[in-house]
Image (tube, rainbow, N blue to C red; front, side, top):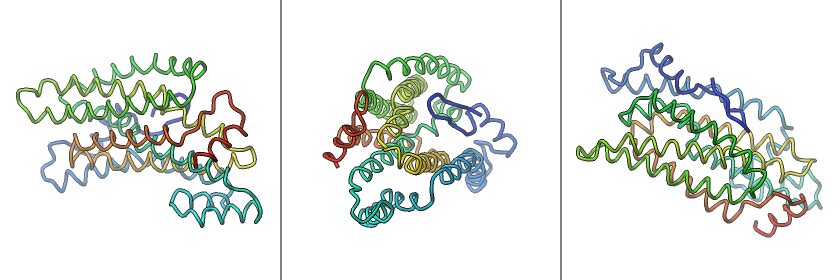
Amino acid sequence: MMMMMKNIRIGYSSPVETGIMEDLGISMEAVSAHQFFFSFSQYSVFGSILTVGAMVGAILTGMISDFIGRKRAKLGHEKEFEAALKCLRGKDADISEEAADIRVGVGLMLLQQLGGDSPLQFYASSIFEEAGMSSTLGLQASAIVQIPAAVLSLILMDISCRRPLLLVSSSVMCFSCLLIGFAFCLKELSQLKALTPILALTGALLYGTVYIIGMGGIPWTIMSEIFPINVKAQAGSLVTLVGWSMSWFTSYCFDFMMEWSSAGTFFVFAAVSGITVLFVAKLAPETKGRSLEEIQASLSSIL
């Protein structure tokens, strides 16, 4: 099992992956495509199933009525979403600020998980082996880099603003995924195949470092700062549910995506990280050193 600072991550860590695959009889040299697909679908279930409990917990921590109203925002039903909020807050209540808060919170959590962090953590061994390098070496290098990165993130959170950290983090995540995808493309070229392990390891280390510094913890911090006290529990429940749902989705689908295309998988993650850069630049508010009223005023003007 593994845990990360700032937000708790529950799931099978990469070293456990090998043991589970052996217990299930999963092998990269499966005798048929059908057995290969079935075996990896088994591991996908094992690799993602623990997030289901977190999703249930996220639902239970908030009131169901508020949850239903906020879910409308995620699904894009703007009118129904606002009608539900007015039903909960009163017909004449101004729900524009609350609606803006929820959209930003849900958007950040969606993009945080769809950017590929959970698969990169849970399937690191497979990624390194697919790139043609020792999984042990790759995992040790990742651990060595991520420990000081976690300390640095605590320092930067105190001395820097939220938005610049998010922008730098998501931008470098995009570059890192492009680098890993490019590494897998070179694997098909015999003359440049030797560069694949180096580029894949470099991309993975860059991704893990900047994720911890920015996208790993700051969305949770912003979530705690943008919601008024009267809706913090319910809105926080929705945002947490979205995060764990996307963690399950990406963890479950990763094996199938890698079977489809190793390079294409990371190009998809790079595209999501690119969208994150735009989202943060256009919609995410700066919350450091600002009152709740100032934050909500800036959100209302944006959305």
